[in-house]
Image (cartoon, rainbow, N blue to C red; front, side):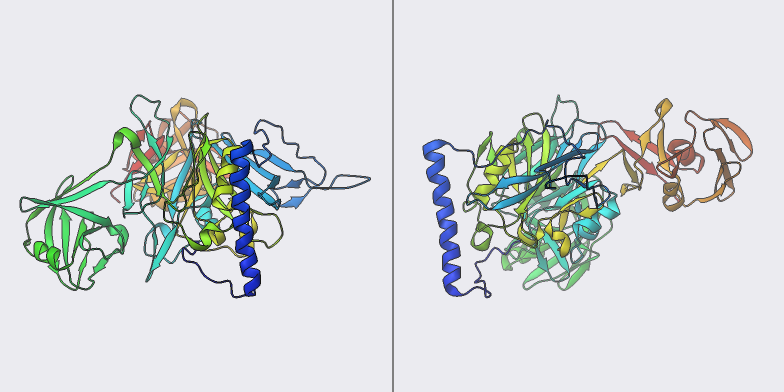
Length: 547
């Protein structure tokens, strides 16, 4: 989180502070003169198609965290560029050859994520999986979601016990937060007539929300936000179990009564419980408090949520951050216009997201190369860098102490020495998506489709989420799964199974993969009285159980 207010750096003498600010003014002047006179590119581009040679002198084996030292009679420098594939469709590159406008060396960490590759995903994740926590490090988020790689997400603010996103947040088509912010949003969306793959969008997201009751409609000012603006504010169970009142407000609890329809279940002045699957409204300000008082228990209320789908398509994920950095392949300098002021305009570590012409999403963290340094680029320099990395459209994310690049099970940039707890992050995952009763499950070995079109999952999923007991016999390689009076016996690498001692043929045999026992999901789930649904567009498996 970058402080949006200008603060004096108490550790610098005042003359040094003036010199520092003058240097940054000079930096911007140099850029604008060069841009006008020469159209100069200030960053040395390195083609993403260049081969990466792990055996380069002094090269570091990032996967193991150990240094690979090769014989060298002279010097043993680190390679200027390290590049490798983390998984099909996910490319990692570390640049050591970049410099900012005044010649300071940078380290640039880049993930290229091909969303056209099957079962590759960029997923926004909220700290603690809710809005009620104090924040979480990117490494912790990545660990609990079994992410391949990750970066920090958007800006945030603290409100009591809650760590809340600035602006709008949509995850897996569920709206988590809406508030009016003059900053750019980045989204991954689907469009009619496309192959179903997600596409990157950026712009000012301003949805229309309204509640309709007693024959009248009222615009909703915010959702799951601590905004104190007069008007109607909406809250979901993501906010927590209870909604507290603020000065001069009236609270209304709404229980679900069908799609976008609700029934008033409680009206209070001090606080209400937010019904499961329902909503709560806060009528803020005298005028709106009087309007809310017209409601009575049992009244029906409708809620409408719409946005420009011609521009945004069907949004899967959306995150407000900003500013816009690149548009139509050209750098954009509009940080001040989007409301950024103070220290955020000075050189800082930066995180950004963009997309290339061939639809690869770029997740980037850039900072000064010196050990322990937490400075780096201005917003303008970040825009130039994203262009040179191939972005045709790009948006800034939270920066400064929040800038975090995670891969290979660790934080690779300087944030690793003192990682900051943030509100949200962007996780890169591979494998099929798996849900149980609409809640996302993150197995340590990703589910996949085996022969016969059967989905295979780690046996731990069956144990922990389907409530079954599992026994393993090493000599016979037999896996026994039981729940209640139902017993399923499977043998590794065999397509013959038994259900309550009755022989059954399998389309896909259980096997060992990455040290985990993988079993056919549909066969096991349905024989434990559950059901399975496959979503071909989202490449997701939904499990439904009543136990």
